[in-house]
Length: 236
Image 1 (cartoon, one colour):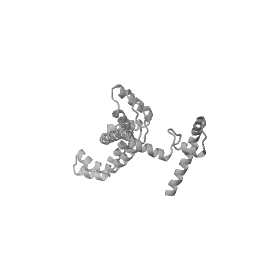
Image 2: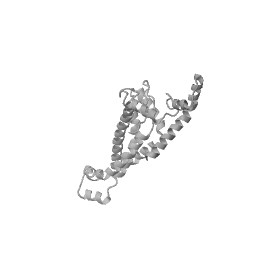
Image 3: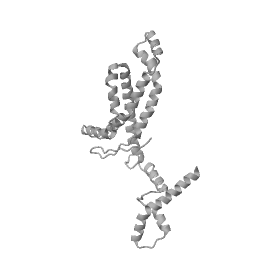
Image 4: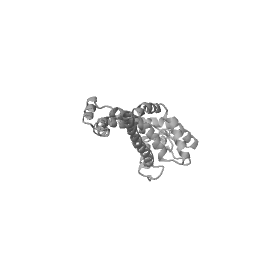
């Protein structure tokens, strides 16, 4: 394993020399000073704005943006991680709650099952790239900027798998179990809490896993009105 890592690092440094050499060579030629191959290689590995940075440059920049920069600064990686994580977490929670509520309504009301479920499925045919700008612009016109628009976008991505999975889970109890509950004269709430909900828990956690991947795996880059704040995806 260590050998493979060393080979990758060696190839990385060689590639950095090849990609950065044209710019460095032009700069050295314009300086009018004699230079050697060693000077060329050293310059390609120490460029301020390289085409391909070296591993040590990436490590130094990572340390600078994480540990040497205040968290409140917009040049801090932790600051941007917080911006993305907060929107993703809030959207995930709202989407999960919405999905559970929709599933409960669909399972217990035949009217909702026939009227609402087709719209839930049809909502996923609209690309997120078409919806995200509208959400940002519309809510921005009403003064809602920052966390709320991004959370709604994440909620839109998360609610569908939870709603579908929970609907299937709430309908998963065996008919004999349902008949047994009816023979005990159990109320609808008792059937829900003592039979349907425990049976749906495995489906819920599987759906939450899918929703989490959808909520954090989409790259949405927007510029909020009047602030210029960018929203970048950071996996967590």
